[in-house]
Length: 481
Ligand SMILES: O=c1ccn([C@@H]2O[C@H](COP(=O)(O)OP(=O)(O)O[C@H]3O[C@H](CS(=O)(=O)O)[C@@H](O)[C@H](O)[C@H]3O)[C@@H](O)[C@H]2O)c(=O)[nH]1
Image (tube, rainbow, N blue to C red; front, side):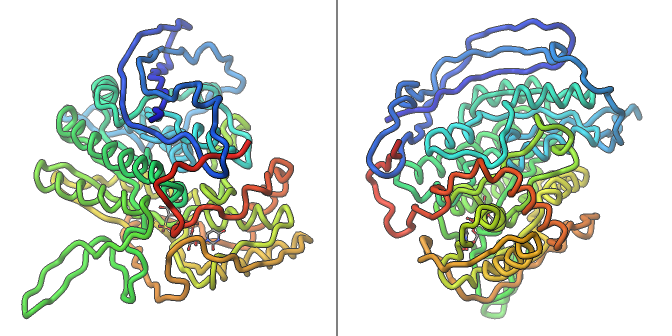
């Protein structure tokens, strides 16, 4: 069984330019290395893809010139100590190199929080393995952080390693001492988890054990630390009743109780988040952990105020059938003249939100922490759309830009309801101040323009779905060269 090569690196942005190397840790979580259509990925195999002894090093960001005057930002990340002094709240962003994590790390840093990114960079490895790429060219995490420092004067610490390796996570916790942990560090694609047995096992192991380790790290080293965990609206499935925020009050045989809302996830990925929610709820009760489960809907968009500051800060945008999500995919499809790929009847309805609202929601959760022992659940989306509605909106916006947009019905590769009732509550983030960026013509114009700008980078072979919920088997899938 192949394993992941994991480098543990610590980027400390302070005074001198020294580079320190130190041997650290090992890990044993298997990750799959092949996908689809017959030929295995020998170069990646040669990497041996093993979580083995690796280097820890410290890079000083002052090695990068300050290309722009550092600016003072509005700081909302400070907190009062018992003696009245003001300190900056420390937030560890696990998965801070990914789509939502990178945007969030920058936003929190700008808001005055002291931020550390923890990431094993595996999202970049998935692309290498499956032959995929972000629509937008993205810089290395090191260059991203250096650029941020040069533009704003703000440090972001970097711990490169795997949270399934508890020794690594413990070191990161003891070194950074977070007041809050935002946990995006999971394999987040439903199709990826449905490629083959090894991807299903990897997804659930990685996600469930990673979160379990975070819970143990909080208990062991930072009891007061608030866990802000990214869950998913997909935990609820599509029941024929209104979806509440985490809990539902039920009267049964004359007795009444408020219970966790029933979970009906529809992929091994979505199920991993259900398992996480149970583990978190249990440890809140048993150990007094304070946690917020953010059941996020489908995210769209690419720009946030911070990622728009420089090309080195640009976020990734996935359009392929494994990692790309519905609206982002449709915009890229429209830009390259590919028909919009509505799966099945297109009545599948989900909650959606702009990535600028993802970063706002996380900040709201951190600024208003759960109490010790409290397990809160917020539904994190701003609007509901069916896939057909999204296709119609993109068609209209494309026409305005002179694009001829067609839609096709693709046989649904997933097992899901294609026509159903959907009405999900989402008030708990609005009350403390979320100001939603609703999907508008101007947003669609700018997303489409963005897609048009990068359309030469699109590999149209990655658009049609090739992962089937029904055909998943034990045999490892490999990718063609
Ligand atoms: O080309 C496409 C792509 C998707 N769909 C449909 O659009 C819906 C949403 O699919 P998606 O790929 O945009 O989103 P999903 O697989 O549900 O997962 C994404 O959105 C989840 C939130 S939610 O959908 O569970 O609310 C997050 O948890 C995941 O990390 C993120 O990848 C599904 O019914 C899917 O069948 C199409 O019709 N055509």
